Length: 109
Image (tube, rainbow, N blue to C red):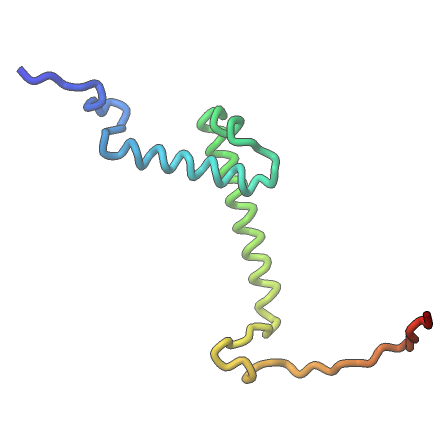
């Protein structure tokens, strides 16, 4: 008769093969919430959050940053400000330098 380790049971879906990946995913989510939360969350608070709240917070932060990125893309579509680094002189817009409208003199010592 063969004995089974409790770690071999897959009732909850975790096996020794995928448990480490699941743990890495949890820590990645915790890192993203803490890092992108801009100081609003600390590691221990996020780690001890109920799973539903952690998932909700992660989805809200992700949607906020996705919308922000899309808005930035829309704002820069009209502007042709990208420069080809392989040929930088091809699309550099000409800039005129205006002299200052005031004159300063060095103080005498």
